[in-house]
Amino acid sequence: MKRSSGKKAIKKISAAAFDAKFERGEDLFPYLDFGKATAVKRVNVDFPAWMVARLDREAVKLNVSRQAVIKMWIEDRLNARFRPRPKA
Image 1: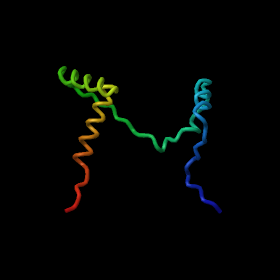
Image 2: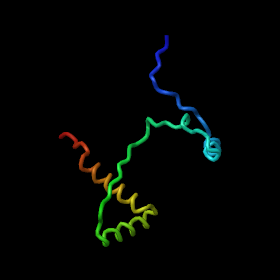
Image 3: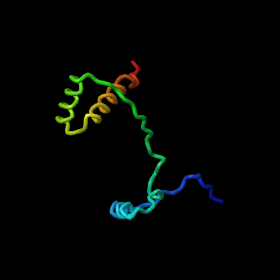
Image 4: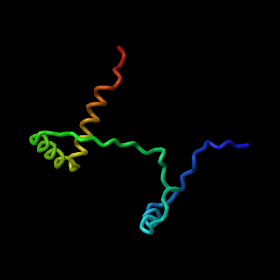
């Protein structure tokens, strides 16, 4: 007897078919894999005006949002800080 892992199989669908179902207001849950979803925690941070201006200039250079710049830079810093050090 085959054992079930308890996970529901995700149905396959083309992007066009998914969009059409969305536009018609149909249920899309069978096509979504929530097991790969990332939890998001909203935080508020106050920055001085000069810092926001510099972030905005960098965002324009990179053609991304200010929020994306902040996320990329924080991720880079965290990765550098918590990266395992090579053993000598």
